[in-house]
Structures are given as structure tokens and as C-alpha cells.
Image (cartoon, rainbow, N blue to C red):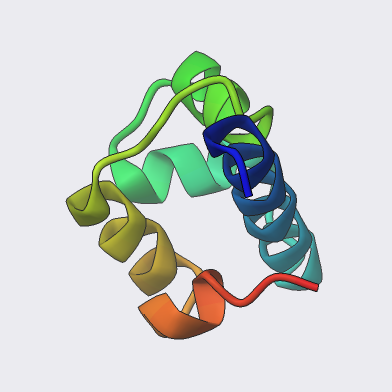
Length: 72
């Protein structure tokens, strides 16, 4: 899997989990102390987040890091 493909799958997974929790991008961004524009870029697969950021995202979505990284 290429880096771009991985980032797109990750972005889709974050969006899927966020929506399943009934959260808006703004709400998730606030939990992460993130700008909404950064949240949008993350969910679009335009940035390569650090592992620490992924851990924060997982915690904010109330899932484990392995669950966050499990793609369909």
C-alpha cells in the first residue's frame, strides 16, 4: 500500500468513527485542541499525522489505536 493510499484509508476511518459517534469535525477538533482546518486536512488524507496525534484521535473517539488503524 502506498503512503497516499494509507492516508486516504486512515482519513476515511477517522471520518467513519467520528460520524458513528455523532460528532462533527468541529467537535472532534475541539477535543483534540486542533484547528478545524487541520481536522479537515486530516480527514481528507492530506497530512501524515504523528503517532502521538493518532493516539489522541483514538482517545477522543473512544477507541483503541489498533481499532483506529483497522481499515476495511
